Length: 632
Image (cartoon, rainbow, N blue to C red):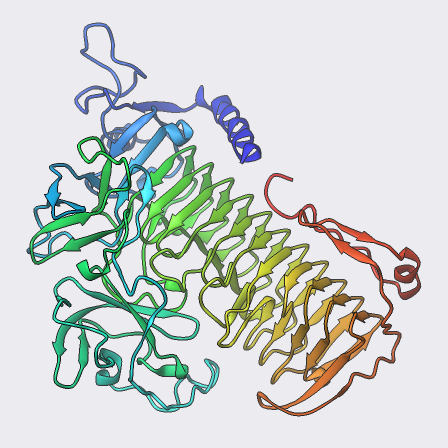
């Protein structure tokens, strides 16, 4: 991240150029809200100096009135907010500027008073937990997002609930029959899997579906029928899609290794198993109390720069597709011309950044260790660029690292890795997803990809480098995925390395795939179920095994591609709906060749071509993705 911090320094200098024209208020840990806030440090006789809280500085800036250029400078230090800082129309033109990671805003409370609780554990009593007024799903110990108590320790339990109803696709209306409330709120577990140790007041359950999951509480247990009753509805019924797995969280039975914790609501305390050598009399433990830390609402021309934001919670409910039901630690809504630059958002239970509006910019931010998504954006003419997003979905595996929609937006030069579901998801109109470096996505769930597009029109996916996306089963995973109602999109000049299915297209039509380089070390599969009108030209495919096209008939133009299988097999599987009804060798024709182009794709995205003359002969553009990612 050297490039990122260098860019932040440039930003700080740029902000400094306008500081002389801006009325400025200061916030510091040694400040006082009774002071004017116009001094960066306390004066000699301690009668004036910086403010102590962001709220007091905001109110002072508002009271100035008429000042379009106002600035709040936050000195290095830790600030624990009792409520979110809300910036509205009255704050338009405000810049909130910190000292980078040195200025950190917390949405939680320090936990003290730890006492031994059994052989391994320590516990601290917390007011509000027993009566339900304080609840949380993440705990930060010495800067670490700790894993909750989990049962079973590894893998998942299998349940016996059935939901044998056909999924008609999202476009087709979802379930063929609407699930009943009972089907959405009950799960039948297997005999012997759960015992009387399961305390409903504490236990939470993740019910896995196909491309998402539902985390809900347990309100009751019927041991005679072996039925768990949920405290709220799941997003899909247990057993839907044929997926019959679940995990229990937050029970002592799941405390199996150091570093884990649980919230004992019945006893009103938080319980933690320290790591070896961790001294709980000196440990810094923060429990979240807020769902959001900074909120910009219906405002314009606000800048947040060089700040760290950490520790938020989420309510106990299913997060829906992409875990999108939760707040952002930094949230921007119905705003115009706002900029988030050089932020570090980490160790939060919900989303990192949510930005919706017009002409918004999220740039050079790092978002990591989030329970839900990294960055979500929507609106028009927004720019999401040069960000570093990683280790998301720690609580909600359906979380998407970078998710967007709207129109005429650009997501470019971001690096994204370690995501349990899709790294990027985007729909909308005329959005561009360009020059992103994406790897280690789809680590847990199914039916998604490095870049997954749903209902996108005239989207452009260009210059991206996607590598090392595993196939975890189910409906599979891919590098570039155009799903239902994606039309008139262009996928060009991209590189895929070590992804078994580089291109998946479902219920999509009239899209163009051109001048891409796809290289795998096993079989390669390109899929077009229920799709039509595709153009596939100038692509280089190199597979150590077979190259398999599912429904090649979807490509109305298939020409001037290099399709090289080291096994010598390029196969066309004919489909009826989603079922293979015949298989044959793909007829090359139209200038397609099966010659080894001697292409090497390096781990930095650069591409070497051993037979340049072949590219020239076919009119194929040499693609290189070494410019993908931040700071280039």
